[in-house]
Image 1 (tube, helix red, strand yellow):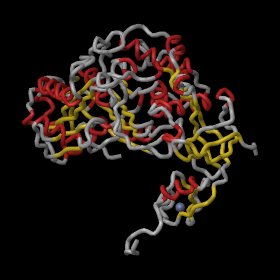
Image 2 (tube, each protein chain N blue to C red):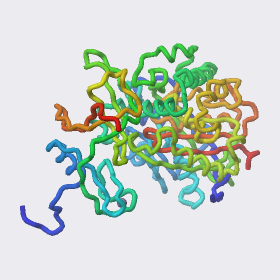
Image 3 (tube, each protein chain N blue to C red):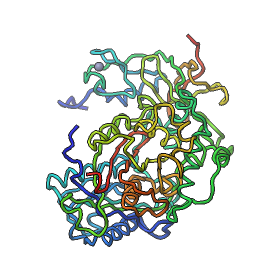
Image 4 (cartoon, each protein chain N blue to C red):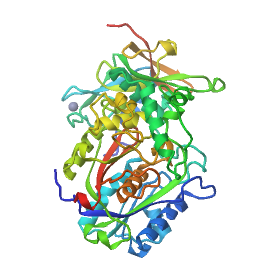
Amino acid sequence: MSRSLRGKSAIVGAALATPGPRPGWSAQEILADAVGNVLDQTGLTLKDVDGLFVGSAFHYTPTLSMAEYLGLRPRFSDSNMVGGSSFVGHLLTAAMALQSGQCDVALICYGSNQATAGGRLHSMAEPQPYEAPYAPRYPVSSYAFAAQRHMHTYGTTRTQLAHVATAARAWAASNPEAQERCPLSIDDVLNARMISDPLSKLDCCLVTDGGGAVIMVRADRANDFPEPPVYLLGAAGAHWHRQISAMPDLTVTAASESGPRAFAMAGFGPQDIDVVQLYDAFTINTLLLLEDLGFCPKGEGGPFVASGAIAPGGDLPVNTNGGGLSCCHPGMYGIFLIIEAVRQLRGAAPGQQIRGAETALVHGNGGVLSSQITAILGNEQTL
Amino acid sequence: MTDEPGRDKVSGPDEEFSTSLTEGKFRIQQCNSCSAHCFPPRTLCPVCSSRDLEWRDASGIGWLHAFTIVRRSIEKGGDYNVVLVDLKEGPRMMSRVDGVALEDLKIGMALQAHVAQEADGDKVIFRPGESE
Ligand SMILES: [Zn+2]
C-alpha cells in the first residue's frame, strides 16, 4: 500500500449550512450557504478556490452548475457520483489533485432541500429494468434484504438493530444541531410502522434539508488558517455492485476491502481510532460497517451494539452528532461524516466532545451498500 | 431496411431478453468459453470477458435467498413481497413469489419460475416449487 498521500493534505475548513428546515431555499442556495460559512472559517475567498468537488442528486453536471453559480473557474473539478459516499471519495481525489499540483485549494461541497422540496429521496437514478417490475421500495427494501440475511446467518435480532437507532438518538440529544433529539426507546423502534420488513420507520434515516462544505490544502500550508488542521492519513474506496440483486454476499460490504486499504495507508488499525463516523442510512448499515471495518468480528455486530459500545459512555464513540438516523440526512450524508469528524478532532464538536480525540475514521456508503469509501483523519499529533 | 455495414442485424441482449418474455420464455445467457451463466443479460462475460454468450432456456428452478414485505395501504393494494432468488444456474435475481401467504415465505424454500403477462409488462415471477 502506497503511503505517499499520508499526512500530505489537510482539512483547514469544515462547516455546515444553517441546520434545520430551509423552506424557500433551493439546493444550490443551501450549498452556497455552507460555502460561505467555510470561507468565513478559513479566511479564504472564492478567488482562492481552484479545485471543486461536488456531489449532488439535483444537478446533472454538479461541478459545472456550482462553479458557475459560485463564480469559480476551477483548474480541476470532479463530481464522481457514488451516491452518499461521494464526498469521502472526494477527499482522496482532492488529495491526489493537491499533491500533483492540479489545484491548490480544494473545495468539497453539498447542498439539498430534499425535505422542504417534497420530503422524498431526490434521485436522478436511471430505471432498473430487472428490479423495477417488482416494485421494491427504493432504497429501503435493498437494505431490508441485507438485514434479513444478517438475521438469518448470524441470529441478529430487530432489538439489536434498534440499539443502533437508540444510540444515535442518545448522541443527538446533546447536539443542538441535530434534528431529532427527543428520547427514543427500543420499543419505539420495534413498534414503529413497518416500511419494508424487517426495517421499520425508525430503522431508517431522517429526511432533512442540509448542506456542508470542506476545504483542503497541501500540508505545508496547514497552519496558515485560524482553525487547527486535520490531516488525511489514509483513504480508499471499493465497490462490487450497483443493485442489491448483484451484491455478492448481502452480509459483507466492500468496506471489508476499503477499510484495510485505508488503514494500511494510515499505518493504523481499528484499535487506534478514537472516534468513528459511519454512514447510517439504515440501522443495518452500522452493524455491517462495524464488522467490515474490523471494530468487531463478522456476525457479532448485533451483540456489540446491544452492549452499549457505540452509545454515549461506550468504548467506541460512533456517530457522535446523532448520524443520519437522528442528526440530519438530506439524501447524501457523506459530507456530514467528514464535518463531524473534523470538529471532534479540533475539540469543537457541537454536541458531546470526545476528550482527547486524535484519530477519526469516516466511512461513506453509497447506493445500496454499493460504494464503500473509508478515510482516516488525524490531528497534528498523528503525523 | 437496407443492409448497411455496421448495422446490427440482431438486437442487444436486453431487448433479446424482453422479446423472449413476450413469447412466454425465460432465458438466460451462458458463456461458451467458461460456461458461466449471467443475469442480467450482458454483452461481455463478466467472468472471462468473452463475447460468446448464448441464450439458453432457464431451468426456472431457484431457491429463496431473501425476502421483504413492502408495507402498503389496503387502498393501494395492500402488502406485497419482493424477493431475491438464487437460480439453479448460479445468478441471483429480484422477483416476486406468488401462491404463498406472506407469513409462509421462508429463506431456502424451493421456487419455480413463471413468465407473467401483467398490466405493467411481462416479468419472471416465482411460485413454490418441488424441493429437490
Ligand atoms: Zn465466460
